[in-house]
Image (cartoon, rainbow, N blue to C red):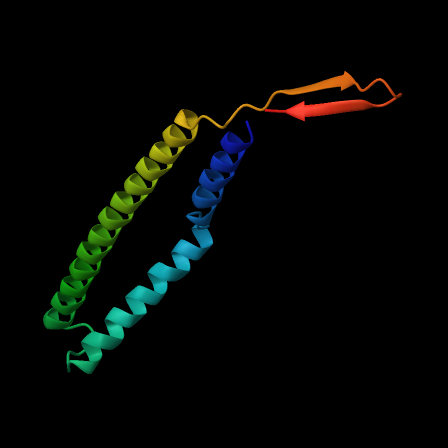
Amino acid sequence: MERKAIAALMLASLALSACVSEEEMATKRQMAQANREKQCTSFGYKLGTPNYGKCLESLYLQDQQLAAAEEANRQTRLHEFGQRLQRASEAMKSANPPTVHCTTTPNGIGGTNTTCQ
């Protein structure tokens, strides 16, 4: 039972570590947009021109592709972690710890003798 509790705790910790609030996500999106704008400006594009817009779009698409690849990698790692946990759980179930039997008998002088095998 204790092993199941440990496995459940590990899974819960993993799930909670992936949580991000809406506010944090909005902040990240704003920062990403500001970085794209800064990059396009540093490339020499002028705000409000068609080339500036194309630059922003191109960088946005690159960011989306990178995020999709990172998410796919994260999902793969998570799946592999789950499989390793499952294999570990199965290994623990199949492990047969030695059984110890103890016998206590009176020793005839007011005490007892205990033997374990």
